Image 1 (cartoon, rainbow, N blue to C red):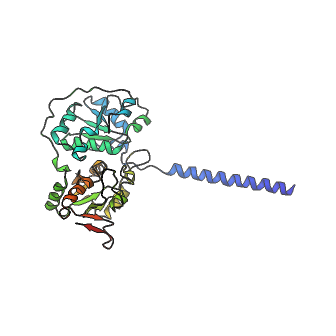
Image 2 (image 1 turned 90 degrees about the horizontal axis):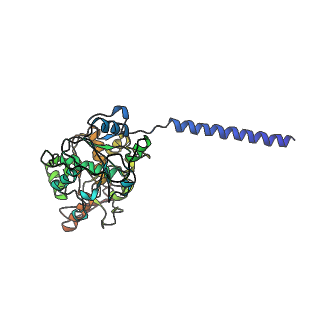
Length: 343
């Protein structure tokens, strides 16, 4: 009987301990708050990232607002569900394989936006299931000179999470005829090719070339792309921790697809000399990931930020033709014994 009671007592004690631990875990879970760049009550008129509530109110208050769903291809997901009134834009309309995935000329890109009714003074909000696709299209609008360009933080999921309705099928836009200004309106924001980068570095030797690529890409262990044969980085590039692979900017994002509050990531960048007081050109493989970093820093007040659109792809092509003019670094540049300069 005593043995039986002892066993029962042990079981009860174990249950109490487990329950207590479970309560502690739940309590800890509740205390952990997701740190987001976008805070609904603090959104300012000059911010680049906005939330679903802000967008809904904007669409209600200003019927000239154009919402664009950005994605590669014909927009299968868009047809299944999109924000009411949103237009699909295929990223292939502003870049092509033939252009080595560089942004097309300004006149071509202008026509793409005019087809959606976008002029210089049209408020534009871009969203996507891929933050980089949204940033890519938003960057082109910004570069062209559209006055008011925003990105919906969290994309369609954030819209649906707010319990706002969606629509199916395609939306037909009323094209605009006159953009209202010469393009590009913000030419200083884009460094297109490797030659343009060399010219920018000649103009400012202190320009910081910041790689948004993953550590394996940055140190030359992989090119990151099946269509880029060689691995490495332009000589002098520094590491802007952002990506875990060539298809993400996971270090900049929360699990729900919203952008993180960037204090910690900026601290990591600072160790590599990437600071808001300098001229900084962000790049990746072909410009998508770098566009996300561009807008995060712009929102946080960085003044002299640029996108090196050609990225590693363009530099590698140039290096194959003239290694001495376009030298490549492989390895961690902080360790002179391990880094190799290919020239």
